[in-house]
View (tube, rainbow, N blue to C red):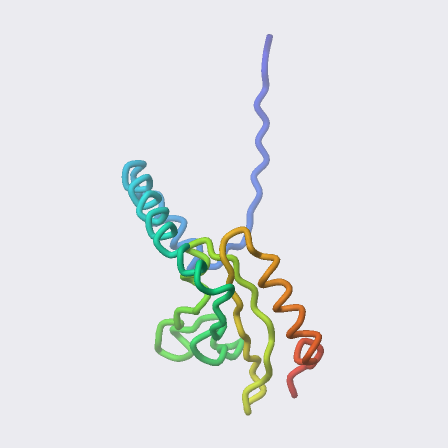
Length: 146
């Protein structure tokens, strides 16, 4: 029986920073990946007990105001500096359920967010709190001044 393999090549535009990270990942060995995954799981298990004494953590979504679009496209060229690390990164890495809600605008009209985090498998708590906040305020309905 003659089997024919057909392949379709799809081209996709990938953000240069994302592409750089994907290409760099090729150099990671299976052993390194497994060790890093085990380390991440140990840290996740050490962080989980925080939620034994609190229902949620409330933090700013970002450590600073967002970049303008022209700066965000190529931050290093626009500002001469590396983009800032967002407050969401540790929550993503450690698998902590988190939602961000709008809480207003800066005097420059840039959006400001609040992130609410809960224990793993307790998303119901953070969704109820986020919903209650949006019922009590109307920031989620507002548009920044242009």
